[in-house]
Length: 436
Ligand SMILES: Nc1nc2c(ncn2[C@@H]2O[C@H](COP(=O)(O)OP(=O)(O)OP(=O)(O)O)[C@@H](O)[C@H]2O)c(=O)[nH]1
Ligand SMILES: [Mg+2]
Image 1 (tube, rainbow, N blue to C red):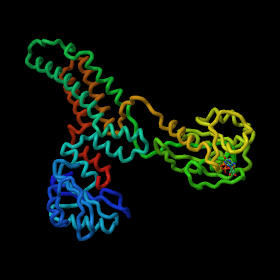
Image 2: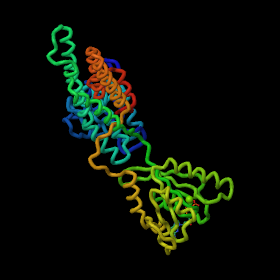
Image 3: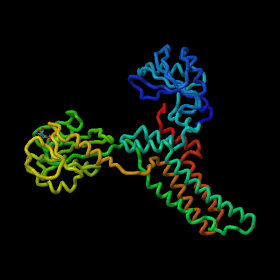
Image 4: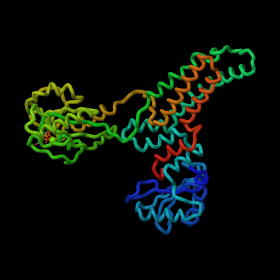
C-alpha cells in the first residue's frame, strides 16, 4: 500500500449493502473536519457524543472521535444514515467530493489502526475471527486474541530468543577480538535456553482453523422413525416433508440450527433398512452412509412405540446419542434414550441442550488457540532457525548460530507486526472487507 494513500482521508460503508433500518459509514483521516464543514454544516462535533444532523441527503446520527482516541487513531467520523442504499451511495459521494477524501480499500481502517499502534497484527487478525465466530467458544477465543493474549506469549518468547542472541553475539565479539572467552562456548547458552524449542512446538499444536464451517449433527435410523418430524420440531418450522409412508426422505437435507452455545448443521437422512427395495432405496441409503462418515455427531433416532428394529444393536455402536420418538404414545421398546415427541414438543429443549453440550464441550482453563495460518508459518520459521542455531553451535559455528537466532527473533516479531513489510500487511488486510 503506497505512502500517499495512507495520508488521504478514507470513507466507506461499514455495514453490508442493502436495505436495513440503519447503515454505518466511517470516515477516517485528516480531512474529517473538512468533511463535517462541507457535508454537515450544523454539526457541533462534540467529541464522542451522538448528534442528530440534518444533512441535505438524510437526517442522520453522527459521532466524531478526534485523534488519537478513535479506532484508527486518526480523526474519525461515524455516521448512521437510514439503511437505504441510495442514501448511502449519495452520502459517500458527497463525502468523497471533499478534497483529500477517497473511498477506502479493503481492511484499510484496521490497517491504519495497526500503523498507528492501536492494534498489533494478531489483534487485527482477531477482528476477522470476531466477525466469523459462530459459537461461544470461538467467540471467547477471538476476544482473548483481541486483548493481545497470544501477542504477550510471543513477545516473551522473542525476548528469550533475544537473550540467547545476545550471548551468542558476545561469543562472536570475543572471537573477533581474539581474546579468551570468559564464558566458554556452549556454556554461553544455558541448557534451559533451548526450552524455546519446546514452547514453539507447543504453540504449533494450538492451531485451530477458524471459519464458517458448522459442526454437523446427522440423524439416522429406520424409515418412519420420526427423523424429519424431529428436525422440524428442533428448528420450530415445518420445513421437511413428513409422512406415514416409510421412505419419505430420500436425499439428505441440511438445515442450520441455533443451539445455546453455537450454530450447527442438522442433517436429516433417508431411513436405513436391512434390504433395499429398489435402486432408489439403495442410492438413498448409500448417501446416508456417506454423510454419516462426515458427521461430528451421530444421532440414532428410534420410534419407541413399536418394537426396536433388528439393526438397533449394530446402529447403537455407531451412535453418539440415541433419541426416542413417539414418547406421547405408549412405549413398547425399552432402552436408554432421550425420549421426545416432535408433534407434542416433549424433550425438544432437553435435546437441544444435549446437542449443545456435546458439540461445544466446556473445557476448563483452555489455552488460547491460534487461528492464523500466517502466524503458524512464522512460528515454523522461528523453530527452523532456533534448530539451525542449535545445530550450528554443536558444530562450533557461533557466528552462524547468532545469525540464525537473529532470524528466529525476526520471525517471532513478524507475528505481532513489530517487524513487518508491505507485502505481509497487504496479504492480511486484503482479506478484510471494505469498511473494516
Ligand atoms: N405420535 C407421534 N407421531 C410421530 C412422532 N414423530 C413422528 N411421527 C409420525 O411418524 C410418521 C413418520 O415420521 P417422519 O418424520 O416422516 O419419519 P422419518 O424418520 O423422517 O421417515 P423417512 O423419511 O421415511 O425415513 C409421520 O406420520 C409422523 O407424523 C411422534 O413423536 N409422535
Ligand atoms: Mg424423513
